[in-house]
Image 1 (tube, rainbow, N blue to C red):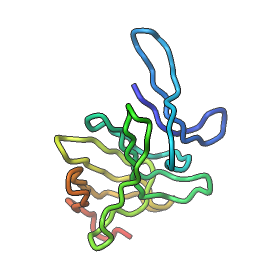
Image 2: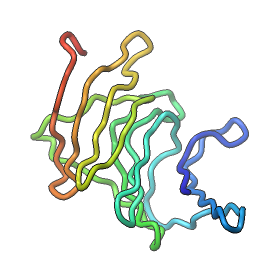
Image 3: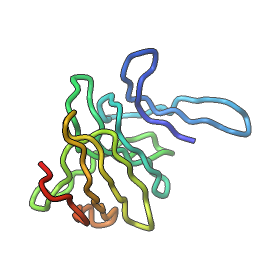
Image 4: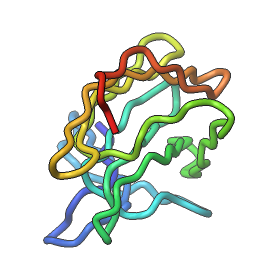
Length: 140
């Protein structure tokens, strides 16, 4: 099991932790280079040998819509930067993601305290492009 970010003793973190079920042991993954900021309310999925992190909120309570990919064995992060010519999901926290084949699906979340999102996006992990599947009328 791999965990990224969240709170540790009341402080946001961007650490990556592995849990080994057979050994009942936790181990911090040593990472190198640039990495995502500490955050909470984000989502993570595993795709092949990588961990993908999307969105959440930072230490200043700003909602995020960035995406990062961790090569688990190398311990190196790469920011995934989709084309800004294509539509992008709004920044959000509290959303859900899952992976099916080479697509990461994104559902809902919170844009602002008074605005919950009810949209569905798909991110093609090969072409690095977002596709809007469904958007609730009158979304921000």
